Image (cartoon, rainbow, N blue to C red; front, side, top):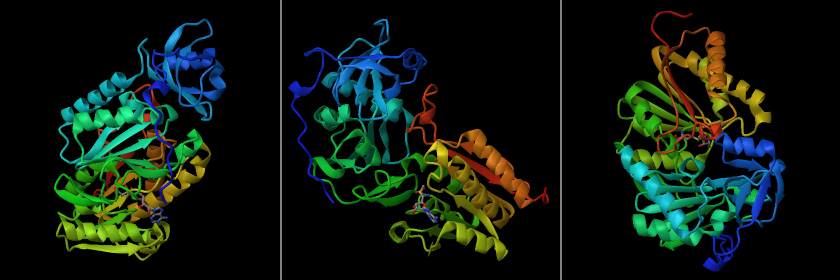
Length: 410
Ligand SMILES: C[S@@+](CC[C@H](N)C(=O)[O-])C[C@H]1O[C@@H](n2cnc3c(N)ncnc32)[C@H](O)[C@@H]1O
């Protein structure tokens, strides 16, 4: 359902240097974190602040030392996000410069697709803003009240720099509630179609940009989709397939690909995508992945390639031990299902499960399954979703490519 949105306020409402910038004083702990390269300041680390939700504040330490300018929102647990560490106005020109630099970086990646991330929030220096490209359309997610107030500037810069046919705001994310922002989806400019056919390497797929998961596709998996396509062969099982992100690439070299997902609409989309590419070797099974993997492994089924791309099982730190059990279970079953020489492509998009913990979980799964698994490669999120070393939260997607070598069991 589309929500009524309040209009973006006029330029006079923004606090650039034209009006005195409110100040936020942070604790020593908060200051140390910012100096260490992290842009987030938690509510508990704000000693004193004059700003209102959506303001851009000057952040100083207890002695008045300048730390940066930040997007401020005391309603959010992360109450300030450093936008710049320079004494500079965060105004229309600033937004345009940041957007331009993020486009230049994407151009340097020579991405073989027309759907990819153009701006990845903190990792591109604009906390709370995501810009994805789907063909001629741009889809935005805004999770910071300050960015919401500056949307006119963002939209104008994107129109000028990229000339899209339309810009859509996917304002239906949970984070917006926490920021006190209205929830809904709306057009920011142009006329935006319900869905758009885009290209990813040799594959085309239809992205439901108004209603699909994330902004319409799992763009962070683009490079892993393409890599999995190179490994896939024989009988392939793509578990948690969504609209066929992995399956479509696997189909080219495989005999058969079975897409498994709990969502009927996702499988319908996968079926349409298969037809779009002229593939006739895909089948679609609606099932709970845990049940299906257990049944198939108990039945002694064998696959040459298994792909696991579950949703984040650990959404918070508290979920971690349950999530580890779930990751172990699906991986153990998948390993048992592999024929000798078979390949497992296994992913986790849980930030709270570290790379080391995922490695440990996979080790436990292989050990309990009684199979030897050889590491072919460790992969991460696509390069248009950059990671910042000092911001661990920017590294969330892990993807291991493992082989069950034809050298007997362990
Ligand atoms: C991360 S997405 C998969 C993305 C997809 N592999 C791609 O690359 O485009 C996770 C998918 O898992 C599905 N899902 C969630 N829980 C499930 C379950 N218990 N059994 C089967 N599918 C499930 C969701 O419907 C969603 O499509």
